Length: 146
Image (cartoon, rainbow, N blue to C red; front, top):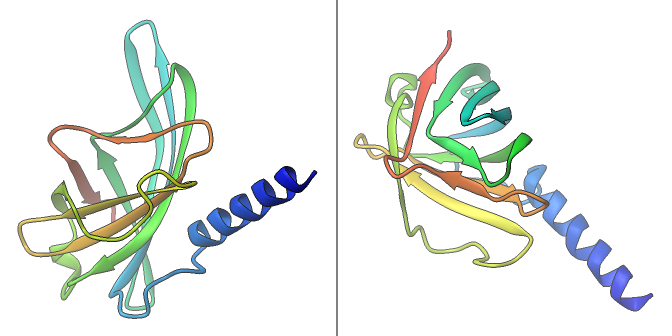
C-alpha cells in the first residue's frame, strides 16, 4: 500500500514536470512534441509533430531523427524549453545531443539536451512510461511548417 502511494507520488511529480511545472523562467520559448510512430514489416512512419511557443505565437514544426523503442504503434510525447533563441529563423535546423548538466539520469523523467550550430539549446523531457525516447545518431532536425 505504501509502495503504491510512493509510486503514484513519483508519477504525479513526473507528470507535473512534463506539464510545465518545472519550466525554466529564463527560457526564450517552450515546445511540445506529440507523434504517433508506426512500424510494420521493416518500414516506419510518423504522424504528428511539434509546436513551438515563441513571443506569444505558436508555430508548428516537423521532426526528423526521433524514435521510440518498441514495435508497432508507439506514441511519443515530450516537452521542453528553448534557450538562446533570438530570432525564429534560428530555430530550424540540425540539433545534436550534449551533456547539459541536470535532469535525472534514471528517474521517471528522461532529459535530453540538444543544440544547433547557431547556439540554440533545447532541454527536452519525456516520461519513461512504456517507451524510451531515442534520438538518432545524426541528432534531430526541426523544420518550421508555417
